[in-house]
Amino acid sequence: MYQPDLLDRISIEPNVCGGKPCIRGTRIDIAIVLDGLAEGPTFEQLLDHYPQLTDDDIRAALAYAAELSRENVRR
Image 1 (cartoon, one colour):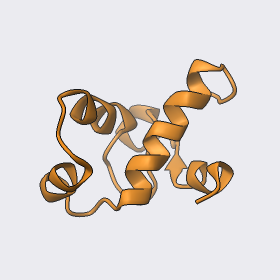
Image 2 (tube, one colour; image 1 turned 180 degrees about the horizontal axis):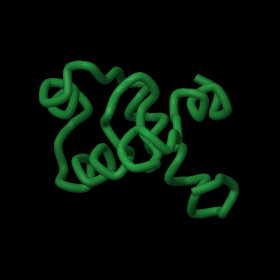
Image 3 (cartoon, one colour; image 1 turned 90 degrees about the vertical axis):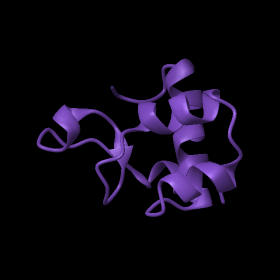
Image 4 (cartoon, helix red, strand yellow; image 1 turned 60 degrees about the vertical axis):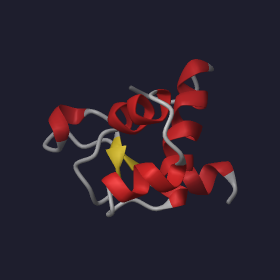
């Protein structure tokens, strides 16, 4: 999936998770996904723990983190 399409999976809404970036349509914030990945599980293990996520949602969290590190997205 093309990176801009992945970033469309991220939402930032003041009334959802205190305005933190989340996977669109969920209350799973990006930090939770990234923290989960940092602990070392596979995508499949993370998806088992959060069944409402998809592979593309995890990739979207990674794409968002990459853009944030380049200061290309709003916080």
